[in-house]
Length: 609
Image (cartoon, rainbow, N blue to C red; front, top):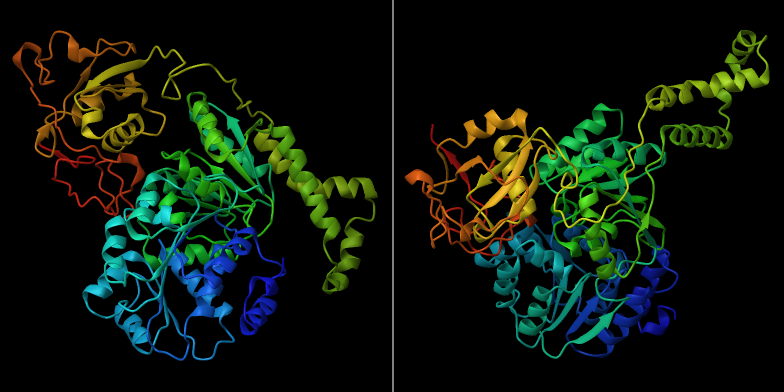
């Protein structure tokens, strides 16, 4: 099918020709005729990078009245980057529509300037929910007469905590508008939006729900947790032309991994919520210009990245939410190009691979971390190809006599060996004594990278917080790691019960744990940590002696800290803007309306010495 057959008008077809589009993508082919021919609500499920913007952009542009100064279309997107990207694309699509005004509204820029653009007569507003809500409250925009509303990357917006903002924004729009919801995945929150704010929507699905795009292949590499960073470097070295996004779970890991890569000579940069908007812009500019080959990012910060040439997505750590993997892998394999999604996992995480396979309906290929010698060979042949394909710069001609004189007694074979040895020797010296990083999988229901191993120097600890305090094993591990200033692999065998938990560290950290958790309070409540007699066998101590019905520990009458019955938090999914050391991570906005003292969510630490 061609764009002409979809029913688009001549001025839009001219823009399509100008941009070099040849034929519509599947989501465009399915959505555009429906949206052009009917005034209907629509739910469209399609992966990132499949052309969703054009799928709703062209119908909206064709249906609005460009001669009117009234705002007729509203497009909500989760991030500033995506907001600007959609705005630019809409302007390109409507370049032949005289009088079209598409205005972007987002945080981090002058609200006065944006209000002036709207006042000039913006037929279409593209906005992030937070700034849009702010402008509505200040009466700087009027969306009471819009005819079309698009919720783009709906699952991302809800995952970032924008549910209440979206609900508030939509309350200022007319009931008879057409609402078009576009999403890569269909979690229950998106279903709630569809049921609450849409009337009998038509549904379009490209592929299966949550399924990964067919242009991305999926690989995983099994290593010991302590070798994760070395594995990352080898994967980068084994792919000399890599242009990648490396995903970490926390801002701290993101910054640390990026700094280590830069220190080790890689063209890397970090993208996370603690960066200022100017810093983010500089990093993204360097990435788009390919001055940065490895962009290390958190999931929240990476939303809105739209770069077509990304060759690899590397999951340095798997996300907490399995559906998030779909968004990560969607950063590569865009615009019909092939991409690779790599996952570095420890033995205990292999079960997550199976869960992801079921969600994305794709099979992972288990691959080996390349050996040092294999990397030397790859780098050598990469250099040879570059030299072979390099065009001769004849500005070098005046210097050839001196160069030839220097190598007059050198044979061709010897000259080639000398030339390539410069690069080969650098890698050979680094990798010649490198160890094999690959490990064999094991059958284990353990939750941590060191669970299958016996560590004679390990100390087992008891802590009086658990699931009822909003923790799972990973979020508790993050909280302990940040509180104790330990590395990712310094804590292991983390087991979380309803009202208490266990964790292990090396004996070397025994004194630090004791000092930090002396008179340690969270929201006014003592958090107690002590060496446990439990050697790794998970037991429900709440049913034995030393614990009353209320779940309080009472050993010899000292130290009693009642269990906090707060509402369970999403814990590790959100990262903290403030960067406090509580381990609570809410880099995105929270739609729960809770505060740090509300008794819900991750506790903020407070120490009394």
